[in-house]
Length: 278
Ligand SMILES: Nc1ncnc2c1ncn2[C@@H]1O[C@H](COP(=O)(O)OP(=O)(O)OP(=O)(O)O)[C@@H](O)[C@H]1O
Image (cartoon, rainbow, N blue to C red; front, top):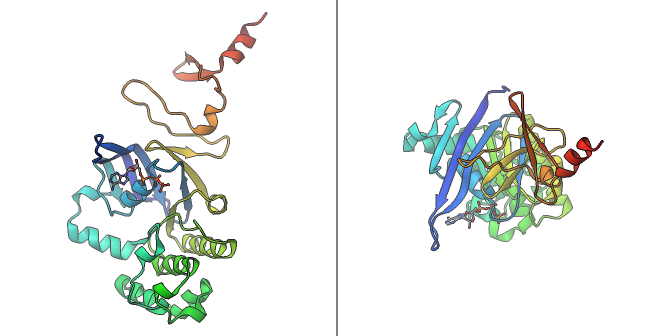
């Protein structure tokens, strides 16, 4: 395992055409994805989480910014190289698990087919046992429950512990038992070296993550444990988007900005008034 990032994105932008004009789904996202860690991306609906996952999984090309895979610019890779990376190095679990499964293959076949595609050696029975699907080995996806499909989709995507394992809301709509199995599996792949990135609204998933990042209006802010240093983007007009927990310090939206010795301090008007009191 190394601390070198598998993926590094700088100032990532993504635009979609909409009837009312282009939607900016990503507005200058900086992100670094490293093996051995589970990162959760949370944030309101429509904030850009799925878009960021699709860009990180090399399923969508960003409209702007720079994305590097192990130091190489992704925009310089040929279609064939991108296909090889997606197949061999990236496990993808779509928001709907059935979208990541082969409809014609049974549960064991999903695992063995993924191993074949990736050139990985895998004990399919052990992989099914890990997600308590041993008794469903010969069932096809349409005969599995939603929770079983999700467990199978995560197991298949994680075959061979790919460099990147990306899952969009992997525990949404799962009961506690299935959610715990899915999260245990994601942590196990991270322990084997995968960089696991998931979008989630689920407190159970955030608790299982090493890092929780917050997405708001297409901007990603840093880790939100208290006391952490945050990276925020300054736009061309000098506006700064503060992390959400910092916003609670300024309930009336008024900020006193002081530039001192090469750094900037933000204070609430009431704290400044107290300091000035005789
Ligand atoms: N294919 C698309 N075409 C047009 N607009 C899109 C497309 N995909 C996403 N968007 C828009 O981009 C923005 C970000 O969407 P995205 O799906 O990334 O958000 P999200 O945070 O994953 O939301 P949710 O939690 O509801 O899944 C939204 O305004 C969405 O409507």
